[in-house]
Length: 297
Image (cartoon, rainbow, N blue to C red; front, top):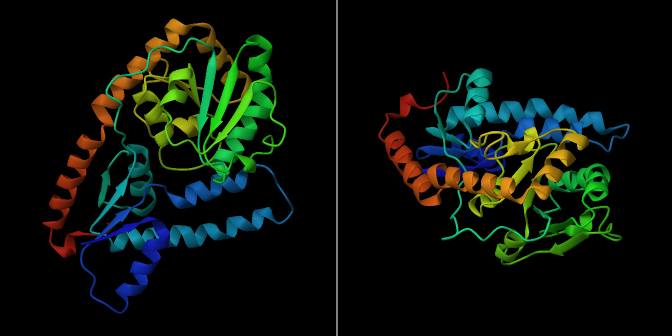
């Protein structure tokens, strides 16, 4: 079989199909790319020619439709993505394979200090915009209520964030970190204030695996199985997001309880060994199907 990841590689497979008899194709669509593109264009900053980027949407939609039709099976990260593709394209060859992590053998103990953590690659526009939204609109509210609070932005390309050159008080940019364990151990709350993007956020699953409470936007938490109010807090808007962070920073018992509930969800649903076994069984089942059974309805 031929495993194709994302639309850029699917475009190559579609061209090859015109000249060659391809083996069964499996399509990994971890983001629905036209949705991610539309959300990104809608976010600030705005300039006069930016709306022209919406003209790329028809090509992305057509590419996704053709790739789904080519594939014997297509894999998405979440049930809501499966429903979207069924509704939009009539796709019937979809399997939900969640993102997965290897949980640490034991969760770190609760953090002593009111620390927050954001993990991401800041050259990726949604992560950069999320960091700037948090620092511009959320962080001043948190510091006003919890002066001892500290926030760490871990990950490559921190210089892409506007605040990197002159970090506000209490803010640290680490750059790339080979081992995140000490940063999770020092954090009481992990942040996912994304305003755009698609798929599901591995950063949330990883934080939950370390038994850390997570505050996320609706888009940040989209597609994940964590229970709102028990295993994660989902808040949109600067004031609501700040209040959720403040509540967890000021209540270590609540943040610890939420973190361990989220870790239990990871153990039940997002363990890499279990997800890999499910993926293998899905591939074998799909490859047994006759070629005429692939594609969209």
